[in-house]
Amino acid sequence: MKLMPAPAGHGIKFRRTDLRSKPVIEALAENVSNTARSTTITRNEAVAVTIEHIMSALTGLGVDNAIIELDNIEVPILDGSARPYVEAILKDGLQDQEVPREYINIPESLEIRDDRSGSWIRIEPAAAPSADITVDFNSKILGIQSAHWDEHTDYASEIGVCRTFVFFHEIEYLFRNNLIKGGDVDNAIVIVENPVNEEQLSSIANLFNLPGIKITDEGYLNNLQLHFPDECGRHKLLDLMGDLRLAGGYLNARITAYKPGHSINTKAAKALRALLK
Image 1 (cartoon, rainbow, N blue to C red):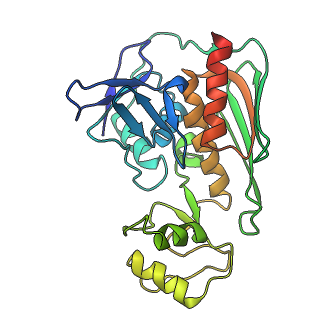
Image 2 (image 1 turned 120 degrees about the vertical axis):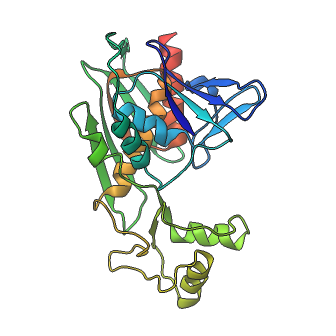
């Protein structure tokens, strides 16, 4: 993946350099084609998978315009957070394009609900962007976690470093159904919600070549250390910021979300696009 500068007014776009015509996909909600565990955008034959972390990094760092070149279908997951993107961008620096940012102002409040999951997102007109989220997985390990972002938040150190997470029983299901072949779990926090026997733990240890892997007193695998006690909640905020950027820019809006996820996040972005039209 290459991250390239773009002129003022360009917005965020992805270019598939491995395809013959090098097609471009605009990072807009109407191009969302799949939200199963990540966000995918598609335009004709061009597809870009797992775009939410780089979209979040660009948003959190104040980048209005960029072209992202991919030589394959998927944005690299790297460590499961936005940290590698943030570090690369900050090392290279940002250019002031000397054009005022055109914030997206909405004429009225908007609320999207998913009655099946109980999730909802409320977007209200405001003088500046902000987001507050609450996550509840009915988990005794995670509990209920909340996170906040606004333009004064240090995204790089407080949000961008927060990694994705998975429940142990989800990994076991994928493994037993031959849906993962190996690799590592250095890019995910693994939550052990249910009792696990030595045979199950040994299977995961062998799969990921992690001898001596254990369950911590807090209920996580010891494959990595948490950056924050509420890192999982902060990561859901990271995802929300990336997904809502698909509205086409920075929202002058107060966003409040309960149990956000890629499906309802992108539905909210689509609803915003429709409202603005």
